[in-house]
Figure 1 (tube, rainbow, N blue to C red):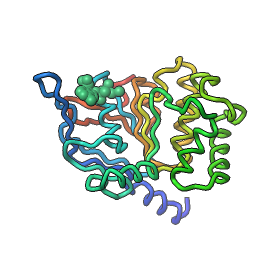
Figure 2 (cartoon, protein in one colour; figure 1 turned 180 degrees about the vertical axis):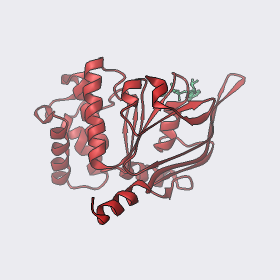
Figure 3 (cartoon, rainbow, N blue to C red; figure 1 turned 135 degrees about the vertical axis):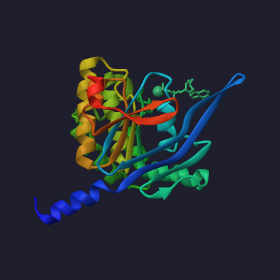
Length: 244
Ligand code: ADP
Ligand code: MG
């Protein structure tokens, strides 16, 4: 590796793309208060893929929704690419989310009345891209995910794995800084899940973005750079050995 390459690798590794500071979130459940996140700190650098594991109800989705700017924390701050989102208006936060964040859900949430390619094109056009450029990028992504032949089909005519691949293409279409995925293969059979997950991780690695992926599957988690879990409202690092 040349000095230049070494330097750029080092620079890449230390650029924090996602930063959570003292993030707190509680819910009231009847008379009780449930403290799901108690002062959570988390930094994910460019090019880093982090797995979030833990049992159902641990707070994984709550954390992803807050980090992905879909929900606000009770207190604490979320920064994306060095920019604090906390003090922004709702409108500015939505804009930040559209331009800098990709989100893949457990269920695909594609627009049922639009074709696969339109589902990938529409969010890009909302972010200001011309149709032609959005279509070009969309087709490129569908191609990378091996579903370009399905581009004109509506979601109902696609298999579960294909629907999730379209959802991945949509999440990556705006060239986000951070990609969140909340149990993205949780609804798929094990073989399809492995296949789709492999594609997701390989695309994320190619693009070098920062990523936080919640998964129940320890084997999938072990493919990532780092594993974290929520224990009693706090984030702790997990030793991959303890999962196998
Ligand atoms: P996970 O994704 O790890 O299964 P969640 O983040 O969905 O966990 O939920 C964590 C806890 O917070 C659960 O006990 C859940 O019932 C509770 N919770 C999540 N969202 C809400 C809400 N909007 N109102 C009340 N309780 C909630
Ligand atoms: Mg969840």
